[in-house]
Amino acid sequence: MRESTIEQAVCAYAKAKGCLSLKLAGQNQKGQPDRIFLYHGRVLFIEFKAPGKNPTALQTRWLDLLTEHTFAATSCDDIEAGKRLILLLLTERWI
Image: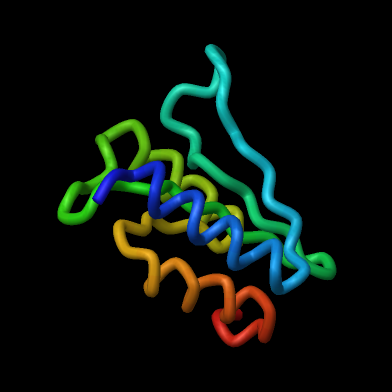
């Protein structure tokens, strides 16, 4: 399965649940997570990866930096795991 397939499925699920999903991509944003999900003042950053793949060192540094600033930030290589992350965003259970 491709990374883009996972990202699209999780984004569609998030949209169906009422979340806003923004793509973080651009030349000056190397290593930043792929998506930011917003729901009623809560924020989740996700770096999508193909199954079994890990974030690069730069991506890991970004995820760590966001976490240090008290944001929820993680990587995801599975559709069902991505859906669980969205459910956590909806219910605030990760805080």
